[in-house]
Every structure is written in C-alpha cells, then in structure tokens.
Length: 578
Image (cartoon, rainbow, N blue to C red):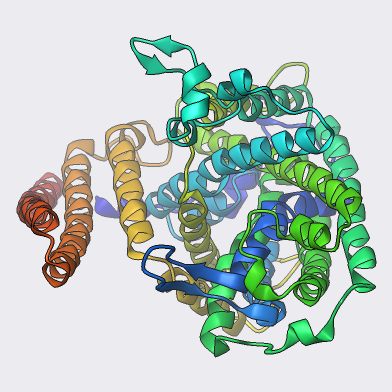
C-alpha cells in the first residue's frame, strides 16, 4: 500500500497528458527567446548587489566578529566555481528538459523517476525558489526604483514615504511613522512600488507568453548594455594594486563567496517551466539553459574583475557596489545609468519567476495534488491564468507589507535541494529506462550528476542553522498539505488503495520532522545560555533557559506522538492488506 506514495508517472503518460486539448498551451518560444529568458532570470539583484558583500565579507558592527569572510578580488574564482557547480546541474536539467518537455520542471522530473511523494515535496520546495524569492526581489526593485527617482531629481516627499517602505523598515524610522496614517493606533506602511510592479507583470503574463518574452528580451538587451557599459567605463580606471592581496581570506573566503553568489545564478532552471510553450523543446531547451549560463558566467567574471580593480574590496559592502564604485570616481552620471540597469535587471527577474511558478502549480493540478481549477487555461490567451493571478496575489501582497531579510538564504536552500533531486533523477532514469531515445544526453553519467549532488550539498551545508530550521518547517507544512489533500485527490494513487493509513503515517512523519526542527532550535537556545553565562546576563540566561526547556519538551512530545502515529499507520496498512 505504501508503495503507492512512490508510484511513478511514466514518461509516455506525461507526454500524452500534455497534448490533451484542455491542457494545451500556446507553443510560441524559440531558442533565442529561451536564452533571453535565462539571462533575464539569472542577471538580476545578484550581480548588482551581492558582489559587494561577497567581496568585502560581513562583520558584526557591535562585536567586530567576522560573520562571513570576504573573497576579495578572488571573487572572480568564486563566480567560476559556482558556475561549474551550476553547469553540472544544468547538464542534468537539459537531459530531462529534452526527454520530458513538460511545464513542471523539477516537479515533473521527480514524478517520472522518484515517485509522487518526492515529486510533491520538490514542487512545494520550488515555491521557495520562485514565489518566496520573488517577494524579496520585488522589495529590492522598489528600493532601486526609489533611488533611481531620487537620482532623476524626483525626491519622494517625507509625507509620502510611508507608501514606499515595508512595515519592518518604516516602523523604525520616526520621520516616516510621524507622517503615516493610522488604523487602530498603528501606522499604515505600504510598499506600493513593490505591489505595483508585481501586479503589472501579472497582467502581462496573463495576456500571453510571447508578449511577455518580447518584453523580457527588451529588458535583457538593456541590462546587458548597462553591464557592458560598466565594464567599458571601469576598464580605464582599474588600479592593479587593488587586486592585491588576491585572496585575503584564503580558500575559505573564496568558497564562502561562492556559496553567496550562488544566488546570482538561480534562474537558468526556470526555462524548463516553459517546455509546453516552446516550439522545438527537445533542441531549444538545452540550448537556452546552457547558453544563458555561459553568457552570464563570462559577464560575471569580467564584472567582478573590473569592480574589485576600481575600488578596494573592503569598501564594497553596500547594496549598490557597482554604482558606488563609479560614484567614488566622481562618475555620477555613469552611476545613474547603472542604477537604471539595476531596476531593469530586477524587473526581468520578477517577470521570469512570475512566469515559472504558475506553470509548476499548473502541472501539480493536472495530477490532482492541487485543486482542478488551477489547471484551467485561458480560452483566448492560452495561458494558465488562474495560477498566474494566484501567484501574483501571493507575491504582491506580502511584498507590500513585509521585508524578508533571510529570503535569499531560504530561496537558496530550496533551489539547491531541487538541483540535487534532478541530478539523482538522471541516474535513476538511466538505470530504469536506458533504451529510451534522449535528444540530449548528460555526458559522463553517473559522474556529472554525482558531482552536481556533491557541489550542491557542500553549498547547502555552508548555510546557517536558522535557514535549515526554516527549511524543515516549510517541508513539514508541505507534507501536511499532501497528507490531507494530495493523498485524497491524487489521480495516480489507485482508487482501491485505503487513504486513512497513509494519512496517519504521513501525519506521524510530519510530527517527527517538526520534532527534529525543535531539537535544532533547542540547541540554539543551549548556545545562547552559554553565551549569557559568559557575559553575565541574568535576564538573557533566564529567557534562554525557559525557551530551551519548552523546545526540548515540545521536541520530545513530537518524537513520541510522531513515532506512535507512524507505527499505527503502518499497522493499519498491513491489516488492510491482509
């Protein structure tokens, strides 16, 4: 009975289902469109913002402790190493995209190789990459947009700034709070630009994928020109002495930089979500993924070399390092052009990821794991309009009110987990279906997929414990949704299979996962207790001790109840089988 959770959907069934008239999307994209979409997704806030932090590192302003060692000019190597890791994964994605040209991306590939349960987990996990990541990008876009207006002499008056900031930022700024209207005594703070850009792109995506691709291609041209402009201007001001020392923090600094700039490469996989809207997916999808990755890597390496040659790496820990480098050289007009490029870059990232998320929901709905209305196609525009609008609301509303500081790390761990499953899936399908024709074949299997898995695991392990805790909670919530909705409505679990034992066992697994998260949290409070004892802080010690005991008790209760429910589910399953 429990093997039903790992029932795989055959490649033939996937292809036949995608050709049904009620599920057909308009095939309009070419290899050039896909390459532009890939560049649009990859080149964004990463190159315009994260390069400075990765080069300079991060230091605690209070204690002076080095939180993240900087790569210095060795950032060039960080980009190369991350590109190699992404290339391993891109080769695996390319084989799947040519073999199974379906909209669901890693979700569909996992369904064909690893079974329904893991497919659901990866589909739920991809929300971190697309939707949650886009909330942070929308907030970032708003900041760049306001700065661009300021550079053009259009300063936002103080009495209206409450319409341009998230609540977390505005509530700590007395000047903004003083002018904000109030509701029940609380200040109203709304990031209207973030909401507006997501709403506008949602309308564009509902109208049509070809129209969206043309708009994206225009933005890609603009931001490529801006990056080339920065390289051309900066080349004449490079000081080779700024490249010494090349790696101030050694290999650790370079690898820490590589883990951070991974965010700058997220996006090439989003191309695979447009498989059902591509004219020749078997040929064009691999070309689009690998081509966009190559173009972006070359640009990243040259940009990093010029940036660290213009300004000493220690001065680059700012949100706008490229613009800062030009301002230091008194090239304010050039800095304004770069700021404009940053706005365009984040706009195209928003567009591509807002395009990707609805198509994953669309595929999951066809399998019954989400409500059937999610799989509706607009009768005129032939786009998945229901999930596009749903994704727009889910991103625009939080972006208007919240500021997610750790969204980048949470997005990162979700993406890396998806990459690992795709690499593993290539090995599995080569073993289970070795004779199936593959328009594109990943070379050196299993070594390339294994190298992809190892490199992604290494980057995941470099992320802080808090990110792992949030990731565990996210997976547990997703598993609960699958237990109470997916199992009941799945089209691929046989009708005669009893659902109740599966749900009881699934609930038990969810509680066990939450209990493990609780143990990690209790370990955090244990470390906080030790710190409070060293500092002699009695108040902090009392708080940490109380929270340690609460999380420990909750974890023990979760382990006990989760194990009990799992055993009951297994026992009922065996009993029903008899």
